[in-house]
Image 1: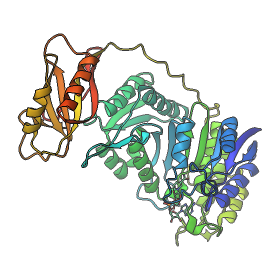
Image 2 (image 1 turned 180 degrees about the vertical axis):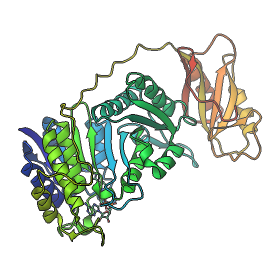
Image 3 (image 1 turned 60 degrees about the vertical axis):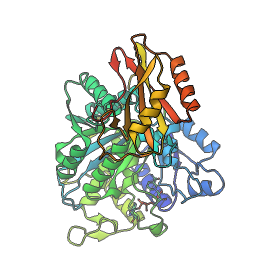
Image 4 (image 1 turned 45 degrees about the vertical axis):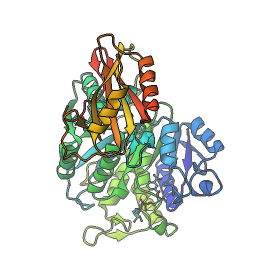
Length: 478
Ligand code: NAD
C-alpha cells in the first residue's frame, strides 16, 4: 500500500479525479489516499500561493502527489501554484508523452509517438525581471550546469527504461552561445555515456517546424524550460487532442502528476469532461511507484474503450465514434474493459523495474577564474553613441579603457552604422589599458568616476575568463 496525496482541484477537477481514482482502484492500485485542498478556495481565503502550510506538510511527507487542475484567479497578485510547486519541491523534469490514437482520434500524424522532456525550474522562468531605463525591460535567463546535467541524464535514463531509440536536444545555441550553449555541451557530454541510444541536436526553430510536420522523426526530445513549454503543447495538440495527455513533474524527493489541461470552468459540474488526461497522469504515477502491472491493465482497457468508440463529447466524431458518454459512464466503460486489450491500437507493456535513480549531482572542481574587464550598463537619452563614447572616455584611467559600446547587443561604437536604431540602454565595455590586468577595486573606482560625471549607471556585469576561455558574449558585429 502506497500513501499518496490527492488534490481534486477546481472546475472539472473533482469529477475527473473521482473518475480517475475509480478506474485505478478498480484495477487494483494499492493506494492510501490523503486528500488536501489547493487552488481557488485557498487563494480566495487569503493564501496568495493557493496552498496552506498544512497542505505543504502533507505533500512533502507523502512525496507522491496526484493533482487535479487548478483555477488561478485573474488579477490580485495571485501566483501560479504550478510554478511555485515545481520550484519549491525541486521538480526539475516535466515529462509529456504525446501519442496518436489514429484512426480512433482524428490526427494528421497517425504515426506520432514522442515524449517531451522539459527542464522545469530554470531558464527565463527564474522570473528575475527589471526595468532600469524608460525604454527597456529585461528578464534574466539562468541555465545551470546541475540543471542541465539532471534533465539530460533524466532524458537518457527515460529512453533506456522505456526502450526508446533516440534522444534529440533542441536549443538555440547559434544565438545564445553561453546559456543554450551550456545545455547543448552538457547534452553532448552525457550522450557519450549512452552509446546504445542515438542522439542528435536541432536548432529549436527548424526542429519545432520539423516536429509539427513530421513528428514521427522524433522519439524523446529534451529541451530547456521555455522551448519545452511551447513545444509540449504543440506536440500534445497535433496528436489530435490536448485533452488526452498527462504529465509528470519529477524531483529528487517528490513527484507530481496531472493532466496537461486546465480546470475548464465552463463545463464544470455537468458530468461531460473527459477524464483521460488526468488518468494518463495517474498511470505515470503508478509506473513511477512501481505499480506497473496496474498501469498496464488500465492503459490497455482505456485504449480498448477509445477503440470501441465510447467517447466523451470533446473527442466524439460522427462516423468514428459509436457512443457519446459522460465522465462517469466513460470511467465505467474503462472499468468494464479491465483485463482486455485493444485489437488495433498497440497494447502497452511497461518495464517492470521500479523507476530509476539518477546519481546525485557532483560539483566539478572550481575553474581558474580571471577578471578581464567590466560591462557598464548606462541609461543615456542622447541617441548618438559617439557622444556617449566621448563622455565615457573622460572616466577612463590607467587601468581601464572603453573598448566597445553596444545597444541591444549590436556594436554601435567604434565604427557603428548610422542606420542602427538605438534605445536609451547602452552596454559600455571597459577592458584593461595595460598588461597588469584589472581587479574589483578598479571597477569600484570606475563606477565612482561615472557617478561623479552624472552618468546614470544602472548595473555592471563583470567579464571573466574561465580556464582561459572567455565567458561573455561579444558585441554583434564585433
Ligand atoms: P483549459 O484547459 O481549462 O480549457 C481549454 C479548453 O479545453 C476549454 O474549451 C475546455 O472546456 C476544454 N477542456 C479542458 N479540459 C477538458 C476535458 N478534460 N474534457 C473536455 N474538455 C476540456 O484552459 P483555460 O480555459 O485556458 O484555463 C482555465 C483555468 O485553468 C484557468 O484558471 C487556468 O489558469 C487554469 N489552468 C490550470 C492548469 C493546471 O492546473 N495544470 C493548466 C492550464 C490552465
